[in-house]
Length: 185
Image 1 (cartoon, rainbow, N blue to C red):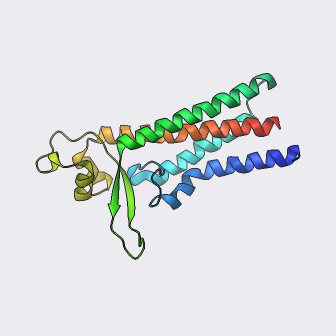
Image 2: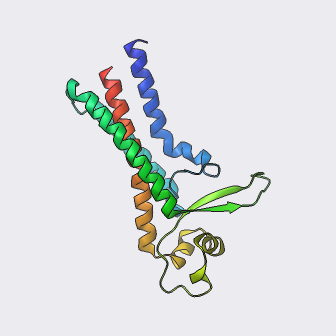
Image 3: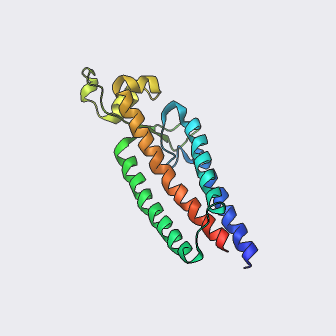
């Protein structure tokens, strides 16, 4: 493989990583690890995710790194991506509730959606106060206005931003590493 082919391959991988937030839309009802459920504004978050990841893809072509430090930078970036991916998975387990839907014509095997949970609203009355999060969300609905009745608005926003950052960071690290590899040839 020539250096030009190698660089072309790395750039193709970079384009794929940039498109990951948009491509994840295809798998939203099928994957257990989708783009973070960020409420009614998920498409706006997808746009900003692609913008941030795209910026990270361009940075290696602007930043000068000494050849002898390039390998170390790539190894560190891949290690950071691995650790932060684990962090995202943990946050997703703690802060996201899967909601299952029965089989339908559109989804013969059933479908599921994911909703970010927050801190319970202290003014929540019974029987809602004693419900599990899955039942509470199924009963109240998944729109932001309905979720803000059962969870505090601040906790929903905080959890969504944490999930967003934990999703973006490993992709940014991968983009930087791929860019440095493509630049070095």
